[in-house]
Image 1 (cartoon, rainbow, N blue to C red):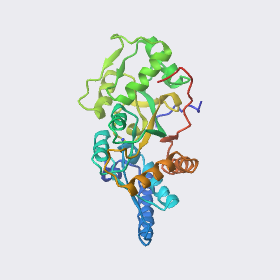
Image 2: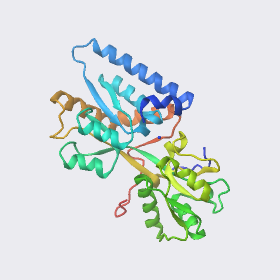
Image 3: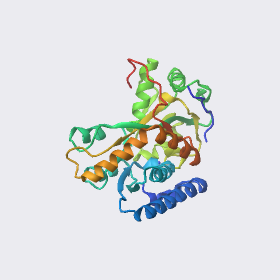
Length: 305
């Protein structure tokens, strides 16, 4: 298991400048500039191709996808155009309506529904992001001293400390996984409903109730979900990660034959050794760890999340 970090220290591209640190934004901007340069160089070739990508917002917010897209352009001699970098609903629509030939998104019922409807190919895992335990700065249960997420949840449950079960599907999936493995039976004495008007404002509820939550690290780190008086108490547990999958056109998608070929090239690259190595390099350049390699999460037979 990776070393756990105890310290505290996500959707359009137009919003990145106001949310990213100067360093990460500069890196992302340089990557897009170099990508545009690569695209212009490729335009001189009669064999230039463009693949259009819809990427869920967190991938752009953390700065990793712009850098990785630029590297893929160089390695594949293929122009990579990000046409949507928004929350899930936006990128799903862009792909299903044919505005994009590659979809990068968390695994979800909606993503699998695209495959079932023959709009997308089979989803393949190419990266993971992580969820973290966030709580009061005073940390009354000592979650910051926990060995991992399971230990942290056991401490919270044993102390009957306030815990908000977020409506966010990612957080819900991670929390249910930990509760199941720890044999925790949640009850109303310590589990609070997420009554916040938006997913971003749930941290203000947590601040008022001095409650613990499990949330995505990227939206926390880049100011999409934050509140004074709270801090990241535990991160780095591989069992608290969620997979990003890549989908390409299925039989009913309107993509051309050439576009299908190019989409497959990009998807194959993302899961290839070269693409995975590039992911780790650009993640560091973006100030990560934000994304983790596809092989980074251990799996135990019979332990399906």
